[in-house]
Length: 292
Length: 312
Image (cartoon, rainbow over all chains, first blue to last red; front, side, top):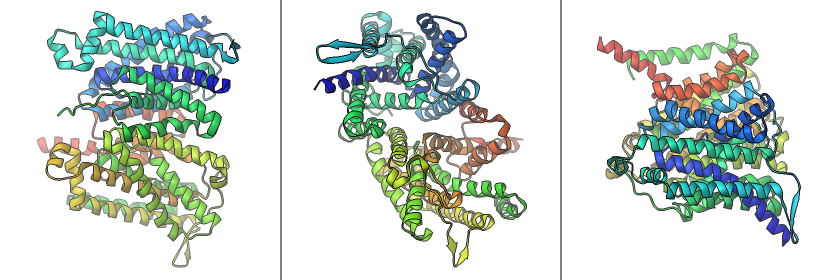
């Protein structure tokens, strides 16, 4: 029984990281109709930037993380939107899907060719060791991950629901034209979404890299989980991404422990297939009307 | 097809047929690999270019075809000629089963479904050691013979693969010219209008996807016979991604687009060996740049010049 609870706790921690990446993914989709297939690489790149700040510049982890957030906002937020999304979005979803696929190959190979093809160790922001709660033992890093991811998510919800800017962003996501009529600066709100996505990816990188190790292809698995988490929970619901992420994380852990560790990676796909057969709009999603 | 294009096609076909005897064995191998890769790429073009769907799992079907062939041929001594239709039908059926739930929802869900399917297929190939040999793969796969004539020699096998890919291309050409194939174009250009004229979008798209998958299965069988050794790494996600981007860079929805794309991902890297991993990096970014400046793919450069010439 205690083993089961431990598996659920650590699965929830992993799931919270997936949820962060999935959250950024859904935000981009809602605000601008961008499906970012390079989302996994958007987690991988900050991991290497952080390693650069730590290794070459000798910065402590917290400073490296803050600097990386800035670089990520500039590179994966602003530049990504300006150079790739803006010219392509008017042609519809598919060209952008292809472009982000190309971007994902490009980013991966640049790191492989120019930095390293090996897996690099990455410092954990949390202390080692276990934390006892009665019979249940939980690692500090799981607890830390849950707290940090939880703070980010709550902070984001407060920002989106309680501030004028946040509510304006939601208005853009719900109906771009109406938002424009109301005098909301749509371009700026969309840009904010891209910046938030970049920061979420950087946080996910900080949390996931200590266990995954920094490697050029680490984003493949995270990206995949993020897509599936987003769809399982409901593509057009922010809460859906959270539920989807945690569900995938927990079920993966249970599958790995009780059924077959070899097929852990397949859980997200199976869940995705079941969801799109029985509830295609996602567990928390609302049916989207077709825009003609 | 204009007269000039027909002449160019015939000259090209003859040139490729005449060239191999003058090449070293590695050159012949590459030419054969091109033919095999093209089988899967033509199938993918049907899905991407004509039915307008994203499939990021073509390598999974390529792999399923290859593994079916390798297992049946090495363990049970089944003939190549029996394996070929089995692999094609198996991939077709799996394609239907995978595509049906995904296409029911929203069409870009097929991209996610195929993506995950590729991961899953790779896991099965890697983990089911009893069946697939795991990471050690399957070796010593025999080459077929045709009417008692052995195709063991690299030159003989090249001509066999060459004729096969031409036949496959002709079949696809015929499919696309049929009324059934015409419905594809209608569907890709304006799905709502196509639906209103009685085209069942989901059924057509699903069928296109399954046929494309079957083509990859056939390619996989040939690949097995060509390389005599297969392992999971040949069919992972990045192979699918590269193939998808190759078809798009070549010019998706153009019959010979996959040909241009295959040259870029199979032949060019061999000449540009000194670039190593930078080649794929540049390829990835080139795709992004191309989509912005040349959305029709490389093959559309010809059209641009033609349009400019006509304007003068």
